[in-house]
Length: 173
Image (cartoon, rainbow, N blue to C red; front, side, top):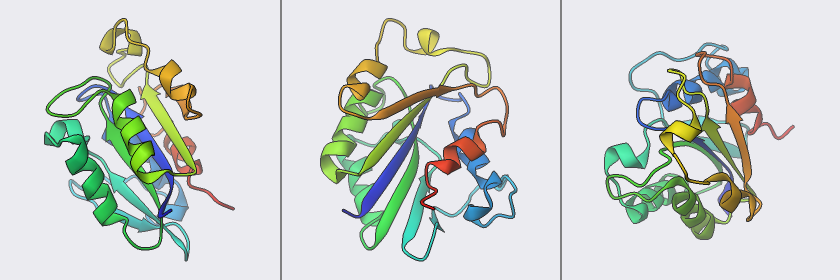
């Protein structure tokens, strides 16, 4: 089992997913001096410990137009050797070859069988939009909870408010 933990940050396009993921750099464990990286392009992999690495994807496969197989294959290629955790942005609804968040996460779970998965919905988003608005009439939470996936909603209206909360998921001490 090369992937031990997976964190998915979910919101519609331009909701602040990558901003929330970048805020994890407030945690010194990610070797950025406790500073949020504002560089346009940042590395994809980080050491969490001698044994574990983090694969970080700021852009959702929906925005890249990837199919589920392309997305999962890319993750598999990047996390081939050793022990891995991943943090990835996802969109809630099916778009551009990708299914909705439930189908995407269940596909990930089936392919990699990690010990833990946590799905974080941005509600409200940085613009104040809530899950009821960007996924109206859709229950994305219950199907995930039904298969023991951890689910939470965070207020994404601030740039750094959730960074340490997200990073704590990868603390094995």
